[in-house]
Length: 185
Image (cartoon, rainbow, N blue to C red; front, top):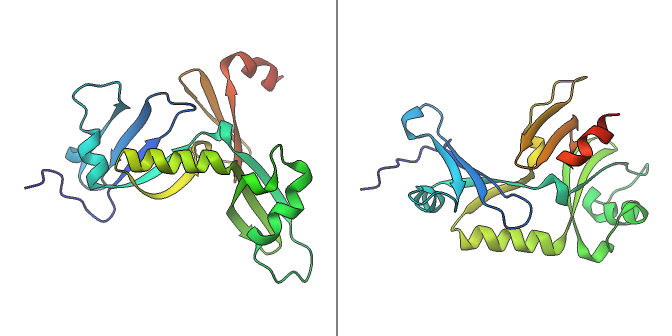
């Protein structure tokens, strides 16, 4: 018998760190606090992570340092879906080639769209990592968007040698410790 009785709301929250650093994980089981657990993988020898990964769906947080957040206004009268036109509207703002970039719609309110762009290879790498860990991802979300948003204040948290800063409802940034002082000036 499985000692973890999965409820529909229970999920594993997994944060992929930049590079191949150990990931952070937490089992979120509303109404079942005795099932909740957290840790780092593979840093802990007796971690329940492999069993949890195979049993619970996962909300995977990807590094904001690998994401580019963009706001765009769709042209009036446009009938195409936003993700079909986003590559062309954002082409000059991107560091990478449009064909090598994956776009995701974070939010849309009428003609105003919030888009995140990531390298397609990074997306493939994250999905391959999910598969190698037996994770069943519900969604991949930039980690900075897991921070609370309370305007006009910013939310920030230090994770290892990096600060995650959420300064917009659908955007944020990651800053290395050494850059934080300059960023805040």
